[in-house]
Image (cartoon, rainbow, N blue to C red; front, side, top):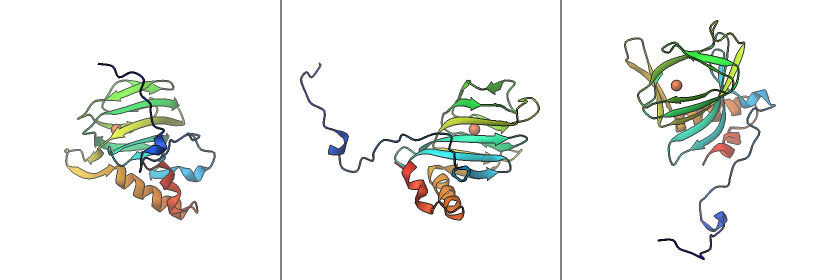
Length: 171
Ligand code: FE
């Protein structure tokens, strides 16, 4: 049944709920990009430590590669700029493309001759973890919301933004 005539309390009524986020996604300050691998960096947007999810921009420059990994949970992405592909698939994600990756998906992201651009930026939403794999499928490492936060802390300390610069993205 419907409950009519109730009132909603404003969000600040609820203890411990942190505020909304409204930020310029592609930063003017290059230091906001966190290096991840040669020609690969990410820009944190949201770290949800309750659900273990995170939102970030991934930037890959030619001929960068995000090494082979499996996603135990689903991933979505929206290409803001440029183009890229997975070595394991025959499609190319281009500016304006939406991408869904099902749980269990294994792939290697590249910006190469096929993509045909100098740089891509994609907004990815990731849940749980990324587990890195070697060519035989052995686990070689992982990332989750907490390792991403630690990467940011270390980088922002080193570049002078301060380790606590990352706190604004944590919920
Ligand atoms: Fe992936």
